[in-house]
Length: 85
Image (cartoon, rainbow, N blue to C red; front, side):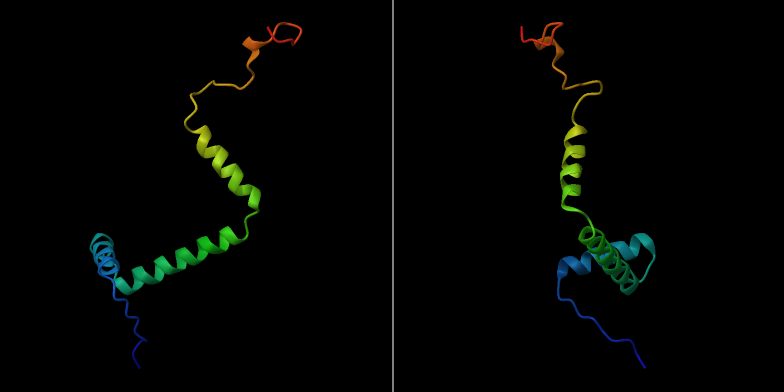
């Protein structure tokens, strides 16, 4: 008995699968299976995340562009008693 067939009519999908098959030496059907399993796994991880995790991800992404040693203390704006200059 042969395996069920999956037919996807997409030139882009075919090009991507063929390119990955050449690079990896894997058959296209195995590549598609792995890609779908990976996508399923990612969706399951996202489903189990708490909404605040998205905020932390954005903060970490923004922090990458801030030069090392930068602080948000703004000490130069206040005197030794904590009052504004």
